Image (cartoon, rainbow, N blue to C red):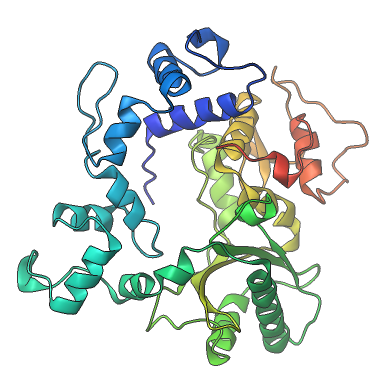
Length: 379
């Protein structure tokens, strides 16, 4: 899978995190060196916002105009940014589809509704290029785009827990909210990490999905988006070792990629609402890393993984690893972590026999402050 990283977006994300954490008032006298990761062009945009509440780049984006860089050169593929971003809020709609719709002249959900109702005349064949998954999301957008109440999260947990117990005959499954919901932010979907303290999680995902569909709690793949990822875990550690040895891990940018069994689907609540629900199933030994990775925020993870990289280590949602010559080492089971000087060291109370039990343990091995989920909200 090829990862396409927007470098400019990463620049803005880092600076935005620094602005959020800034301990002094920002005004139009700001100098670039006062904020980490901030160059002159970005500092000028920040000063514009401090002075007027907006900036020319933001105005152009909101007006669906082409955005120019600091030298006045148009940035490729930025026209229609506001409308395309709105389209991409629908589950199942990616950047490619959003651009197709915009290029055909559509600017709103209502435009798409009209095209479906009356027959589209702007595209080849006289039909709107839309899949049944996307059409379902468009039809139920009022439910999918409104904030998710706590009662719906509770409903999801109860339904999934019942399904797990039914298909495995085991009542010790653990399920916890992750994503923005765990960081105390409003959320439009329910993201959950699932694990079991003793049994294998192999083969559970298909049984779980079928039970939820049978119970009419999960919309089937014949009607809406219901995507399953499975079977990639048996070789994942060997895969990681190879990448660590060859230095191809993309520590700071490869946020979304892991090899857990997953379900991305549409949940039907007891009240009849359609909600987006994501389930991530992890074995117990990787549960703390999975929890950390899927809680976010994305920018917090970039900082954390970049710090690991600066210490010649690799952190993802599966493990913490380091390179030792032409070998890779799982931390802490196979050896101690490195500090920023590349020196092996053990935090107090640690050795190879100690097991990582929670997110705080990972932070301790990285020698960074422990942060509760609500303290990880970078823009």
